Image (cartoon, rainbow, N blue to C red; front, top):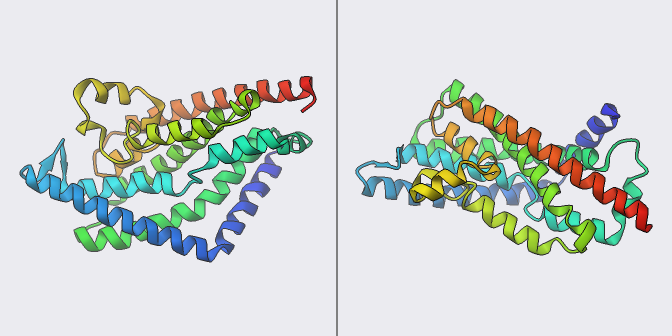
Length: 260
């Protein structure tokens, strides 16, 4: 594996993302509007239940939403569809000529592209939610949340590549993209804490990899000291990267056998 190539790929993608200032401003504005609206709704729900809802205060729910939205908004929401189109069009064949795996290079590029967006989301959350709640997470909480956000993005990217690899066989990953996003939104905890779900569904959701993509950073950002969530994320990162690598290896082998 050419580590230098991956670092250069990530750095190049980060510079390109920073150069797209208009896109960054739009993303920040959209993110600010979403966390302000959803945060106010969850605070109202908590106030209607005596100040607490499913073990969260209104302020905790505000920071929960800020983290879960940052974990997803920082990424390309249509990545599965884009990967599927590249596989179907044969673009992926050209990438096989690189001195590193296609999956590793693509992951490096997406991580580099996402990091500037994540940094902007964090600054925006501090400004918006800080003004609304008149408080900021403590250093320990903030550090754990940032680590969880990075792991969440890596989990998400690995899973999206695994889902998109279906295009090696079916040539169309659009339906897969639609299903995947809904799973992250609901059982991943992006729109609501998993504790709000009915008992059996909550337990099932916490066993699925999607919880590592949104719920884990949200839970930690809300002030709940549960470092085991970071371990769970690490395990899912390893597992999902393994699945994605296996799927891409099988898919690339199929392309070579059938001639693209």
